[in-house]
Image (tube, rainbow, N blue to C red; front, side, top):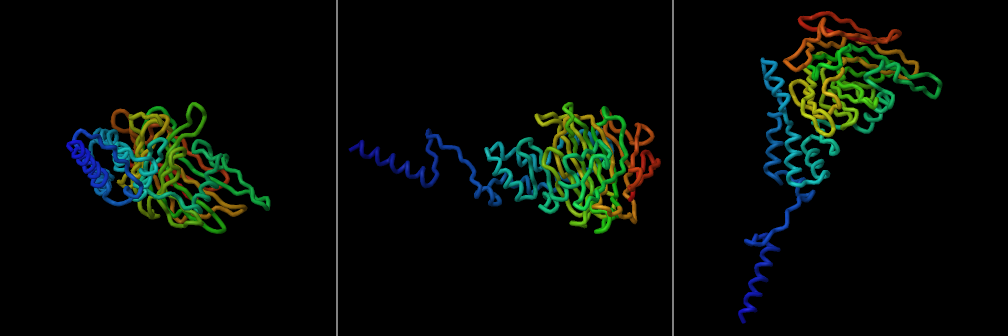
Length: 358
């Protein structure tokens, strides 16, 4: 009789565990694995949801007067996207589940390297244009007209041209802070097809492969709205970050930290005081250039800009504080000899003011 009572009690307890989720002391419960449909529901995990709820505050760049304080902030910065990724990994979310949650809140990441961003990916039509102008031969470290060669069916050759201001020293500085106003960025169905005003950061790896990131404004005939963008050539590609004004000068920061991970040194990008992207570069000390790039189809001439692109108040981060990009360090400028865009530069305060136009 006692044996039957014990058996009955065990049956009841087992039913409670299976149906109600009751945990019996001494009985190990199987780990809970989050399901995609559960994760998709807002508030599935309160701690993770709280990261997204407070993200706007942590994406803002604080006001700091002391350059060393600024460097300390940049060195220790962890984006809300990265915090959420870390929290989800700790809870054994799958890569697919992490991607789903990030996308739901306007973020993305590269599961292979851990790079992350806040923005939107190009549409298929936008990506088609990007693949064309930034094809396999494109490099920010060569003159653009030398790395672009496309011929139309009628035998006419599409053309590309650019102007750049280049920092000669590639072994000292690990970040750049500047203000850029994109200007008119003229485009036309019978003229300039695509226009990009940007700042490149990076240099070639020992293997010879290009390795860079950038931030700027892009505009094309297929999408005439000027858009902020960031790009990494081997982590996440292009991402767009909202509409840009032709006449507003905005702050851009690209900083490479001393934190080294398997994919390289961690960098952060900020546009107009808001975090946009984090990724990796092979080197911490890199090359820098500001660039105005244009493309035209067939025999179309480049369109004329009503207003110039304007880079100013540029400084570079170094081990102790920063260095204005002015008469020192050494600078080289380049523009296409037979075509626009053109350039001029002069000292404006403590740094170069670089104007470029088509």
